[in-house]
Amino acid sequence: MNRKYRKTIIAGNWKMNKTPAETKKMFEELKVACGKQKWCDVVLCVPFVDIPAAVRASRDAKIAVAAQNMHYEEKGAFTGEVSAEMLKELGVKFVVIGHSERREYYGETDKTVNLKVKKALEVGLRPIICVGETLEQREFDVTAEHITMQVKIALAGVPAEKMRKIVFAYEPIWAIGTGKTATAEQAEEVCGLIRAVIRAKYGARTARAVTIQYGGSMNPKNAAELLSKPDVDGGLIGGASLKTEDFAAVINAANQ
Ligand code: PEP
Image (cartoon, rainbow, N blue to C red; front, side, top):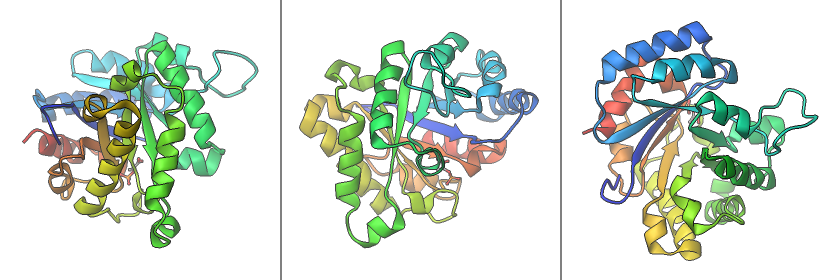
């Protein structure tokens, strides 16, 4: 974390979990468990159907609501899809773009990620852009090349003045939902690389203001060590965001 230059953001990604009633309950529990977070912002990325309940419950909880996906077109014949404008109107503040599960199961590509990033920014949503390598790519030692390409394509056509709205999440695919966490050194190395790619394109001032999270089996036990690294500005947390106690413990680790 580097609190001087950028916000620490702890975001929970619920994936396809929790009903609207369960959403209300967990927000209420978090209000009690977390109190005021002085040093970090908290975001919950909830299923589409939970968004109205989450936005209502977030009003006095200081938690921003995120969607887990969106379409890049404004409207039209895209059965089952949801537009950025629809999310904005509901009070959503952030949107996860290019999560590895979306890339793997729903055919999202670097190109569609870029289209979604530009659309989100256009309507005033803050994108949380997920990038990360497979185990095979890490073993072939092409992590840096792969991440550089993902970051460059995601940011194609994004103007410098919008960069403060962008959040990156470095999520090594081999660490998501597996219980295997990247070491703090591995997380720092790749988060630093993402910042270097941003710096090369937009300059040092812009690069140091961008929040870059780590995601991949982050939990109450490993959060403090990961967050102690200067380029790791928070977490995108799946499994450990589903239980109030665990998520509150990660938030508290970011508040030390
Ligand atoms: C995620 O869903 O983005 C994630 C990092 O999941 P988990 O924390 O369960 O690995």
